[in-house]
Every structure is written in structure tokens, then in C-alpha cells.
Amino acid sequence: MRTLAADFYARPVVEVARELIGCTVTHAGASGVIVEAEAYHESEPASHAFVGLTPRTRTLFGEPGRAYVYRSYGIHALLNAVCEPAGVGAGVLIRALAPLSGLELMRARRAAAGARSLRDRDLCSGPGKLTQALGITLALNGSDLAHGPVRIGPRPAAWSEPRVVAATRVGITRAVELRWRFCAAGSEHVSRPLPRPRRSRRTVV
Image 1 (cartoon, rainbow, N blue to C red):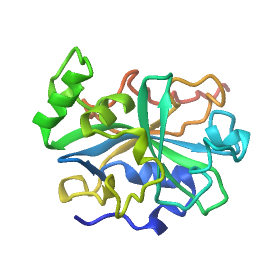
Image 2: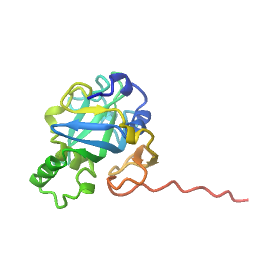
Image 3: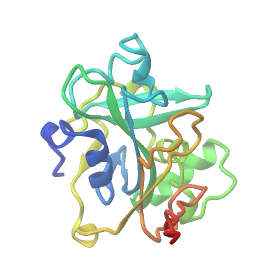
């Protein structure tokens, strides 16, 4: 399959996060289209890289186009794409996918993990769900997203020009004002809470 080259990721992380909407993730016989992603950068305190280079964040400060996979709350492995030039701590959290292929494999993996719903719309509608569905584990941390087991490919024809909405990120308590969460508008596979449109400011005369 065609994959995104490292130079795609070697750009500002917010730019990459937006442009990943509509791209595909493939691993172990299953794939999906990215419908939700969040950007994180070392300059803001919600990012793991904010604390600097540590054994945990080493991958984030490495070469762009690598997978940064970490465990969240001691339960879920979460998939991120490392961005910006090496030495800059930045990554995009892949938050949700629209299932594309291997749906029965996804259902089997999610069922084995104790999933309550195995409907198509619920298989990958969250960062922990999608890694379960695709069989992504911590062992894949640092792997190459162009040539490794987990691969991210360009947008298929049906997703060539997705309408993307921006919102604030989910599940954080710092840098909450940044609108660095990007979602495919109207997708039923986006995680909850659904993104809210920015309220327009009325001018008082």
C-alpha cells in the first residue's frame, strides 16, 4: 500500500493533524479512515513532551513519521504520529477511525477486550477502541509509519477533500483553550463529546 513519507510529518504538528483527517491507518488485517486527531506540542503543558526528554518521551523527540504508542490510565495503548523535525517533541494522537476493512477482526478483538457495543460506529470511536480493533500494542512504539507494521496512507478518493472542523481537545486539564482537535464533519465515528462549533462573537455597538 502507499504510505505517507516522513516529510509529511516533518511540519508544524497542528498542520499535520488537520491533514491526517481522511488518511488511512492499517495494521494486522484491518484498516480505517482517520476521522479525528489531536495535536500536541512540547510548548504546551498538555503534551507529554512538555517535561522534556525522558525515557518515556524519547520517541516523541525522535524522527518524524514514527509511531509513539503509550499506555493511558494503565489500560489503553494509544497511537500517535511523531511530527516536526527530530529534537522537537510533537505528535498527533489518532482519536477515531471510520472502519474500512477487516471489520470482523475488529469485532473479535474488541469483544475479547470486553466491548459493550460491536456496532460499526462504535468499533473505533475513541483512541483506545481503535488500537484494540487494529491490534496495536506498546510493542509498536517507535516503529516506522511508512514501512512498519502500522502504516498510515494517503486519503483514498472518497476522502480526497473532507470537511474538517476544529475544537478543543478531550480529556485534558491544561491548555484547554487550544482548538487542536480536528474532526471529519458529520462523521458518526467521532468520539464523544462531539465537537462544538465556535460561537461567533457579537459586536456591541
